[in-house]
Length: 142
Image 1 (cartoon, rainbow, N blue to C red):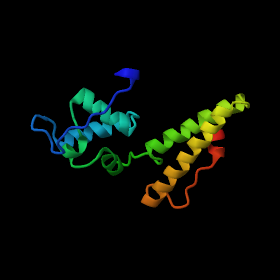
Image 2: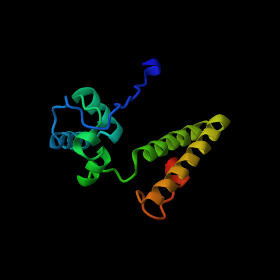
Image 3: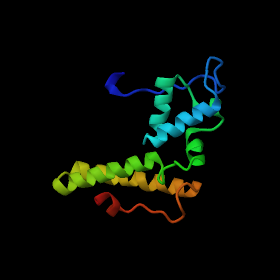
Image 4: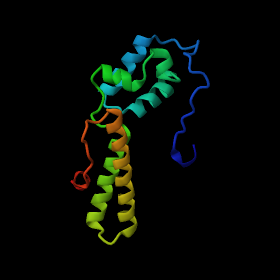
C-alpha cells in the first residue's frame, strides 16, 4: 500500500459468509485470546482478517469485538482512539518541554487537546466514560 498504511475494505454483505469455517464460539475465543495477549481492538480485527480470513466479527459471532471484550471484562478503561490521542498529546508535550520555541508543535498540541476534549465529551454523553471525566493537560505533561 502507498505510504505503508493498510486500508481496510469492508465486505459488501453484513451476513456471515458461507465459506467461513469458524463457529461463533471459536471467533469469540480468538478475540479473547488476542485481547489477553495485549492487542488493541483495531489490531484484533486486522489479525482476524489477515491471519484467520474472518471478514467481520459481528455477522459471525453475533457481537462486535468491543461487546465480546466487555462481556469478558477485557475492555480497556479508556477507548482506544481517545487513549491514542492522549498518548500523542503526551509525546507533543514532552517535545515542547525540550523545544520551547517550536510554535508549530505548540499549535498542534492545542489541536490534539481540543480533539481529546471533544471526544471525551462524546464518550461521557454515551456513558462509556464516567460522568464528570475531564481531560487535563497535566496528564499529557507527565
